[in-house]
Length: 94
Image (cartoon, rainbow, N blue to C red; front, side):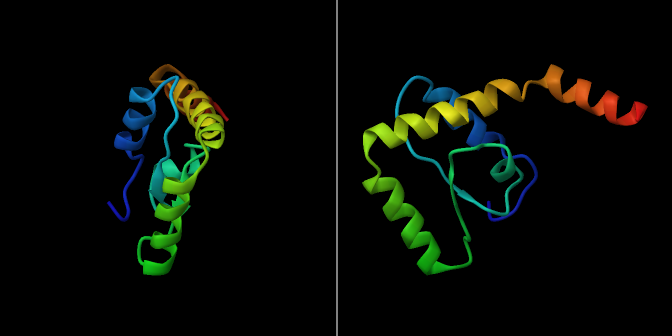
């Protein structure tokens, strides 16, 4: 999608690739773009930016893929339902 809330497909991709390399190209307008650190963000309305993002993902060295994937894994692991609920309750209290 070009815009959405918290994109679960992006998080599912990261969970499915755990311990492996891989690249994630993600619209900068998705909710997941602010929490999935390591994704290649792009403006889906710009053909040039999309081309650049896809090229970067395809040409990315495996070492960088693994490093980015580890960052995304940490983000996904940290954003559990329990953590989300706790943050919501804390926000209501303050």
